[in-house]
Image (cartoon, rainbow, N blue to C red; front, top):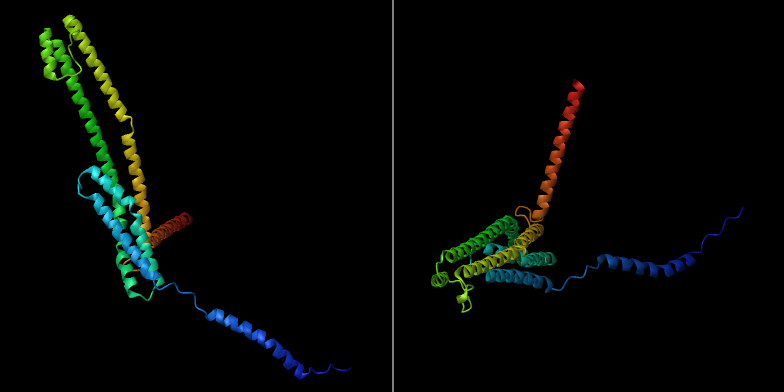
Length: 302
C-alpha cells in the first residue's frame, strides 16, 4: 500500500512566511492594547475641582453668616429662620465634599489634595450632628411659636372684650346727653358720634342705637379674629416644620455617606453605621436561634 509523499519543506516555509506577518501584526496589536495606559485627566482638573470645593465651603459660610446676624438664639422665630437657612443652603458643602474627594481620587499622589480632603472631609461629622440636632430644634421652636401666636390672639380678644364691655357700661350709666357725650369722649370711641340729628332723639333711643353699634363692632372683630385663625398659619408652620425635619434627615444621611471615619478613612460613617446595624441584627438572630434551640432541647427532655 503506497504512503503519501512527505510535504515539501520549501512550501511549508513559504506558507509560514506568508502567515507570519498577519500573526505578528495581531500579536503586536494585542500587546499594545494590553500595555497602553488609560488616558490621564488633564493636570489642572484635580486642583480645579479642589478649588471649586473650597469655594463652595466659603460661599456657604458667608451666606449663612450674613443671614443669621444679628444672633437671637433664644427667640423661636430666629431658630426657625436659622433652620431654614441651614437647610436651604446645606447642599453646597455636600457638593464641596464630593469635589474634594473626586480631586483626591484623580490625583492620588498629591499629598496636598489628600490632606485637604482628610481635614475638610472629617469636618462632615459636625454637619451630621448639626442636621440631626435641627430636627428636635424645629419641633421645639414650632411649638413655642404656636404658643406665642395663641397667647397673642387671646390677649387681643381679651383687650377687645374689655373695651367693648367698658363702652357698654359707660353708655348704660349715662344720665343725660351731655353725660353721654363726655363718657364717649373719655373712652375714645370713634365709631360713636353724636351728630346734630342725634340731638333730637330721646336719650333711651340714642343709648339703644349706640349699644347696637357696639354689638355690631364686636361681631365684626370676632369675625376678623376667626378669619385670622382660619387662614392656616398654624398649619403652615406645622407643614414647614415637617418638611424641614425630613430635609434635615436626608442631609444628615448624605453627609454621613460623604464623611470618612477617623479610624478608617476608607469607610464612611454611613458604611460604619450600616455594618453596625447589620451586626446587631445578626447577633439578635443568633440569640433568637440559641433561645429556640434551648427551648427545643427542653421540650425533648420533658
